[in-house]
Length: 165
Image 1 (spheres, rainbow, N blue to C red):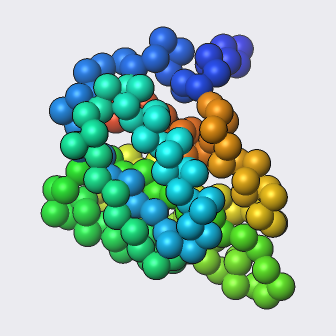
Image 2 (image 1 turned 120 degrees about the vertical axis):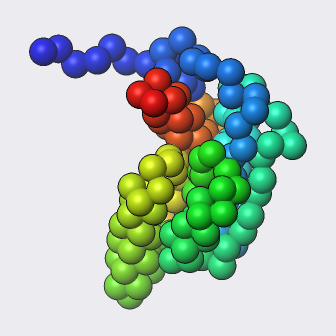
């Protein structure tokens, strides 16, 4: 079996939006830590959502204190039926203590648990980097902005889950 063909730059789906997503409700769930970097990730996410036809009034933005709190907020959003998909955005920057390892690991594990429990996709746009320079390299204005990439992954999963239903 051969490897899949590479996707076009900026889109995970090779032909762009696979469905009409204008009626979807999406929540951008972002951390308050490292807010300048997170704001750049949010901008990348918003660009992807509008490029795929989501109406701006169907995009909700919420902030949580930090990455550790993302899973609980995501779970509550899905429990309340507040959205079809979530994009989590944050920047966990390694420091001098093991705190980074605990926060990063529990954040990702918790979000995976929420996604599987609720059967709805979460785009994982939480950077886990060694320093601020690495974070900024992943939060630029191009297609490689990790907010953009996490959003496209979530949208592609929404399309896939729709096709399976």
